Length: 202
Image (cartoon, rainbow, N blue to C red; front, side):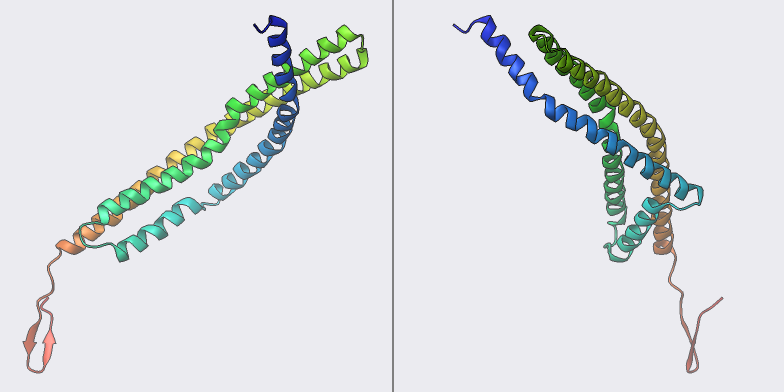
């Protein structure tokens, strides 16, 4: 039978093997979160100037559907288009939401793994290695938690923007569909022949 010491050694080797990926993941978050901050600031500036790229793209696609849709299918195609745009906006938002969970998780792993290495170094009497591991442990904690907090704040703002965009897109689709129904229900002008000319009665 496998002894408890063998299992402990196996778990230690696994956690030690995860050390480098966890540290790289924390470093990646420290680069990724500022990029998302910049994207959010740019989008906020565009909204301040009344520029809405997502809504404009939806309007252009909806106009294309109006021109190409067969009679009676515009309502379904507009709803499908709205759901596609909402899914795309949600997918972009999920990139920020994921950091809320991944950041603290990587931070915790980046804390516990170096602490295990630090204790092993302490048992060997290697004080410099122990101190280096402890510094890495506390740094990873701060990095992971900081990334999670910033991502949470960004997600609050961008969720509100997504809801606003989806609401305006739905309103635009309803107005376009209502306009098409009015056009379809309007009677065709009756042409009367007056000599050689055709006139439209008032």
